[in-house]
Structures are given as C-alpha cells and as structure tokens.
Image (cartoon, rainbow, N blue to C red):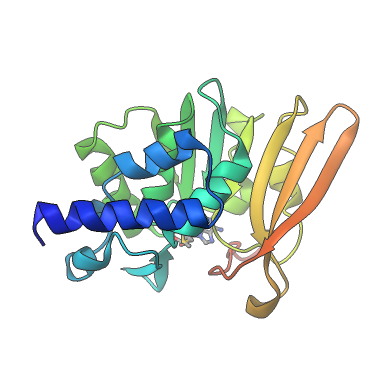
Length: 216
Ligand code: SAM
C-alpha cells in the first residue's frame, strides 16, 4: 500500500473516531502516532487503518480502533500515571497508553504474543513499557497500587484482585465484563478513600479473560 493511501486511510479513521465520540485530542494524537500496521500480521497490513478488529494469532484479536480510543478516553490517563494493562495481545493498546502515561505495566498469557509485542516496543523505542508473561487476573502486586488499570479481555465477574490493586486516590479501572459474549459491557470503577463507584458505560464484545486453572 502506498504511503499516500495509508495516510488517507488514517485521516478517515481519525474522522470516524471523532464521530464515535472520541474528543480527547491527546488520545487522538496517540492513535495517530502509533503505526497500527506494525501491530498486525503481514496478511492484514492493508486493513490496519480500518475501524475493525483483526486476528493476531492464538485465536486472539487486536481490538477495533474505536474501542481502543473510547476505552483509553474513559481511562482519563495523564503523564503522571502508573498504568496496568491486562491482555497485551499485539501490544497496540499498550503503545497508545505509553504515549499518555508515565509507565505502563502489561501482562499477557500467550508467550509468543508477548514476545512479538516486545519486539514492536523495542523497534518503536517505547522504553516506558514493562512486560510480564503470566495470568493477568492476579495483577502485578509488587507494583501496586496503580493509578489506572485497563483490562482488554472480558471478565465474567468483578475482578476483585485487580480492584484491590487500584489506587484509592481517584484510581480508575476500565474493564469489559459480562457473563457471556452477548451480555458484555464496558465498566468503569473509580476508587477513592470513601469507597468504590461503578458505572456501566456501553455494550461491547471482547474475547474472554481466561484465569489460569486454580485462580479466581
Ligand atoms: N490489548 C490487545 C491489543 O492491543 O492488541 C488486545 C487484546 S485481545 C482483545 C485480549 C488479550 O488478552 C489476548 O491477547 C489474550 O491472550 C489476553 N488474555 C486473556 N486472558 C488473560 C489473562 N488471564 N492474563 C493475561 N492475558 C490474558
């Protein structure tokens, strides 16, 4: 695909995101900066700037740009924040967050996906991303509390272990949640000293968050 066509597709995608309600210019410019075509397998490269999820191997997907942008906006990330992402996948969402936060911790259960994502982070010189291979439902207790937590796979029920690792100084966690694929929604949890507030934001469909046997 020529650079001209790719640029045109990128402009069209950014307009689509604005129409979908993404108004935060920091989020839009992070989406513009991260080369999504480098986060998908070669066979899908010409579709990388379209507003759709794409397969990345191991039965997993890179999420639709609109979903990435809306969830990132809902997370209200600043450059002072320490952020935890569960479900590195291709590394695309992590790359977007890395431009917006101080340090990003990200966990993936498929080793091969994580290694591919790490190669992309190195190539793009994203030095504020720290990775872990393992079960993200356990969080990253040694680094807790986190100012922000973003889960990019659908939990069946409230992920209490992760909520316990959220800062009580206005910490925000965004997660898709639902008992089955047809009943999922994106939820926002906000923790303060006074307790936990929860809001259902919009319906969505995500691959499941899979705890390792014996966990949760
Ligand atoms: N954020 C990813 C991206 O930008 O490409 C997309 C994530 S994909 C929709 C969901 C990811 O969550 C998959 O890569 C999947 O393997 C991972 N996942 C599911 N359950 C997990 C768990 N318990 N721990 C860590 N990763 C998990």
